Length: 152
Image (cartoon, rainbow, N blue to C red; front, top):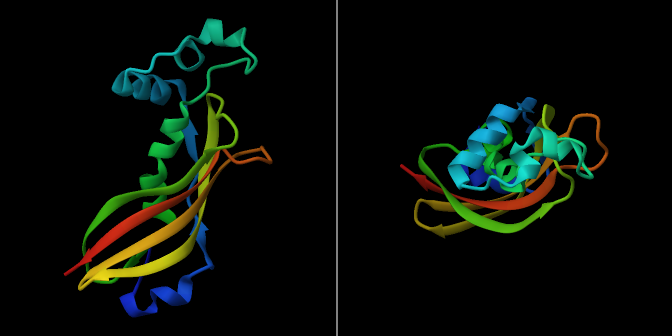
């Protein structure tokens, strides 16, 4: 996480912020996500049946990949100095480009897209993320996410 003075944030717009560490998406993580979201579609949790599918294996839920955005931003995002609290504010764009097969490694690349002062001590950042899959040309997903930072 890059921490900079609030007035300097604009200098980082359209600049790559960094890359997160690799994270393995194993069957245990996929199953836990299925249990949490009540989405037990066979393509995610039934190893035998998924082998017969076009993917040849189980795949992560698209929303599992999306749910990792907060984690990845903690590694390769940007935050103003003096932040008391950060709040997920939404997404302007999310596209699931390619499924993540079980036991794949994923990581994120981020770029600051926009800085908006919403009020005294409130800064809204739009960050672009690309979650890549090790060994694949196409990313798992691309997103533009919004984060509200409340300053002390």
